[in-house]
Length: 165
Image (tube, rainbow, N blue to C red):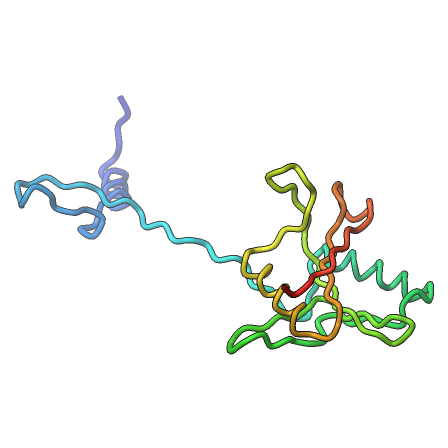
């Protein structure tokens, strides 16, 4: 049997003392209590910090820089424009790419995933998918979703043109 000094015992009591807000009286005041379950709060998705690329975007930027050096494209810009879709609703495409003929394209970089049918596709929240479709319908520029091939961006990139329907 372990023996505690009076000082250790008082420290133990202070540490393990339950406050009244941790318990709820049950059975109409007959003296029985139940401990409240801790309140679980959902953790929000991390917010994107404007002007900072994530790892997938940085890998795609390296690809665009290589295409620029190879004279395959005329230029590219990161988060240059914001497309207003509705009141308090907008989309800021990751990249605006200028082709050699001067035409512009928007490229939105997403992560890859396997869908329920075993097919490799891009991953996006449902609201982001809706925003992409709306943006494709209202802008005069082509909008592409770009995501790494299975196994990572070193295996190449998949490109899907979004069409407004």
